[in-house]
Image 1 (tube, rainbow, N blue to C red):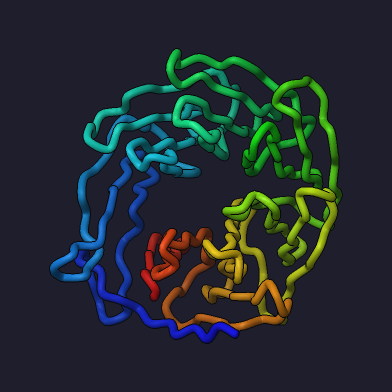
Image 2: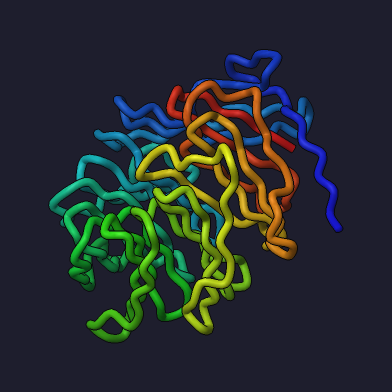
Length: 293
């Protein structure tokens, strides 16, 4: 069995004893600060600031090479940056409402976005153009991709599966609350969902059925955009709660492994797990970021 030891590590910008710093996203200005861990100090430091977004940022993702960043925003657009260039390389427009999610496909040349305009769009990033629009019936809060499948999570309490080679929905999985986030495991075998019924669900992508349901006394999904994730090795599921705590479940046993509390004073919106598995970052609605290891 795995035994975890969690501690905060200091952050260089506005560091305090708790390891907290102002959020890396500035919603009003639409600026994104790209951080890195300095090899000399071991501190998280600002590398550069990316400009060009005029609205609040709703999602961020690196491409598979780590050289580009894709961001969705409330200004109905998606922005693409090269890491070495602070100016937006491309702005993708076409959605009629807030863009809630943007994800790269398996290559850095294609992307998928979801919006509150009840559409999911596929993009050719080389041409900077939309190559397909899918009408999805309900507000889309998150979207993920694997192989030829696009999965979208919705306000109408449904998870929908789409074949990118055809026009129709291939599968619908109902849940008990608005779907706030989706995350695919590294091996693309399982999907993790978070929803407003205060549960996380593990879905088998081969059978398209719910394999596990995680819940705990005290855990409350704090917003329509609360993000839950697998650990890189799919050993754990992690999510932030409305009370500022992080809840960690063991996938194999199905049991709650740990509750990390005491650092956040506001609802935790999102968590991210470093690919190496050594670090976790959490961010709350009060614009505080905590780096854990």
